[in-house]
Image 1 (cartoon, rainbow, N blue to C red):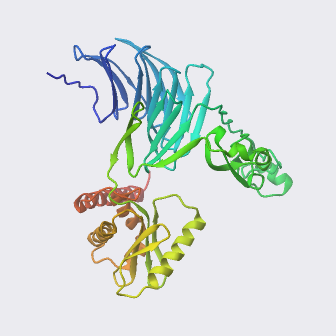
Image 2 (spheres, rainbow, N blue to C red):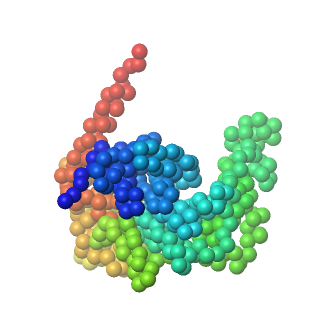
Image 3 (cartoon, helix red, strand yellow):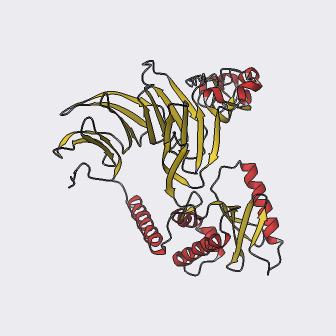
Length: 440
């Protein structure tokens, strides 16, 4: 026997079954949360949001639901059998909320989002206290709080796993202050026209110190430092005055980081046995970067799947060109560089396709990935040449984005990629035709 619940008109994003209430609470991409009776199968209530509802947590005892959406907000609802009430809306993320975890014992809510951050909301304290945790390079997609050890485990789209020590005294990050001039040297920012005119100086760009929250210029905030007590496990911008107050013991990490080896979409744990299970897209091959350059050493396309500074990117490009272009024509297409495998292939007589892989990845499969990209370029341009990529580089990037995401294979079907390209071209032609018409 089974019951069919017609709860949503679009994809269901999350669901919770409450045995005590005999309810099924679900969220979906129709921008709604609904709750239904498991005995009768009837709809008990529904609430709509302004954006896709992406994740859900439910408190069995108080019948409160926490719903995260794609606008970055978390809505707290009190659910009743035939009605509901909106308690509050939590705002703190700059990207869509992808994961929630509710701890009913300490009454703490944890949220992860596409802005690469995790926020702890102290719901039980009722003082609006929040803690910001920054330690991921990609979208945070799974959370789990371990009550026994006071640890928070977070997983991201790039396979990163962070274990946060929540049993230590942490400080709340300050709110960023607004100012028309630097709060250290009093130089005007670029929108402060009056002060710029009075002082006959050019306006500066505004930055913020992560430790004190003051609005400062680049000259007064040239230092970078970690500050784990506020959740900053990576170096962040601090003003020169705050940098001097940070001691070496203040930089002691309060989190450990691990590699999950694949895009982690969901995660669960058994603390009693010390086991974690993750699920996500298969990581058959993971590229760090993809470069296209000519025999003359001219870079035609670059795609980076891991965060690097501009200086590091330039060094990688220079090293790849020197290594690949210096090799004899009949050499192997694989070589070792630092801790990476380099796979390259020369196509179209003058273009080299070069990819960097992790040491344990399959280089033959990476070569097949490069070959598939070449086939897609050929199919779209028709006997593609170097000039096609030079003058239509945005199409080359579009094809690559339809084919690869985060360095992993997203779509293996040439037909599906071709359909996406046709739809994009049709949309572009429609927009150009619309914009060319005179407005009356």
